[in-house]
Image 1 (cartoon, protein in one colour):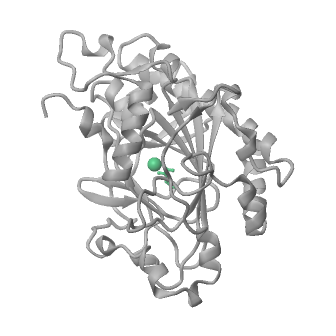
Image 2 (image 1 turned 180 degrees about the vertical axis):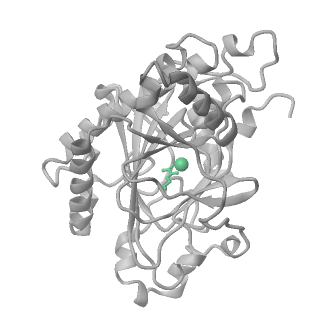
Length: 363
Ligand code: OGA
Ligand code: NI
């Protein structure tokens, strides 16, 4: 990561190699040469255990309006505590992001993906940079690939935005994304406030650290023959502190690791799926859990999701909070945010698994 002088925009040097646009590949999937398709085939998919959707265990549902209401607050807060400590994932309903804001962004995204490839590639990633339209963390010609395209953008603080990578088509896209970014940032910080209170620390503590927001917009094309052997997004845990995921269309795909198996999650209509990232697991000294998850693809339908990722600001340190560790023992090393990002990117490229293991003390 380095800071560019022009707009002080942090640049994540991921060394991403350019690969094919997956939406375009999917469009003529039946005529694709075998050697290209081969890079998307994942042998491990055949042996992975998936829990069926009618599984008795249900991901917790947290009602934000009940957290805001003094009468129901304590009861809802104890559900939130359980969700963060035991699941690392929950659905958030009545979150207050206006329906209009969500609908406008959804509409503009659909229109963006309807544009011809050359138009979409006007906001393509540049060599070595993660921001823009393309793929994340591709380090070699041999590496297996995910069946998806992503659009990764810095959204907060506003002066970090690099509009070169923000689609100008449809013309309302930028306003829609800005409105969505502002609204989700507010929700994320409100939740962080409740999380801190539950942990017995000052309400602002977690929120103050998390000044940055990026969005990762995922487009998973359908794949008629082979969807069960491919993966949309490889297993990973999020490097940020707190993720708010919006599913744009009602197609299942997200799966989370629960008791050693993959549990499919289908968001309730209008809900945001919230999860704890590695940074928050570290800050809370392991009290809150960052859980591995992945996205599978569908045979017939495309799937689109938007992850709003809230991370510590670049001048902050990622390490167990003194107020939480107290007289106990810190379980993780403390590193500066630039060091943390560097580690995250290198770990992703090498292992594609939980980077947090590298920061564990006395393993
Ligand atoms: C992510 C992510 C899951 C999904 O973008 O980090 O986990 O369902 N997305 O798209
Ligand atoms: Ni994720």
